[in-house]
Length: 172
Image (cartoon, rainbow, N blue to C red):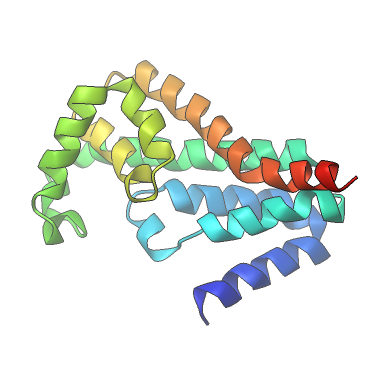
């Protein structure tokens, strides 16, 4: 099954079974934000497709936005925890072990940008799941990380989901 087929299938499932929209969006946002898993499950396209369904299929924006924000924040929180817990071993784990210069570059990025780096990383595909992991490795202060994590997760979720509702308003 190709990525496009998977994305189309998930969007069709949500359209046909709207009561599953929140758990599906939570799971996709979680997978998209979790270090290592995001490399295997590219969920961004499916989230955008589901967002496009919001207005045309009558799916309520607010619960989907909340599910996406919470899923992304929980994925990043777990990535941060993995970074804190295994910081001295992260460089030897896949995919970091395959790209030995990635972790030192990411550490420099986090030290330079700090909390703002969490926001920047949220909106950059390659950085999305890596930045929280590195924030844990460099032991960013927990509450600073969580503030940036949850704030950026809900902004990101809104950006992905809003075009569906905006598109419908423009058509009317």
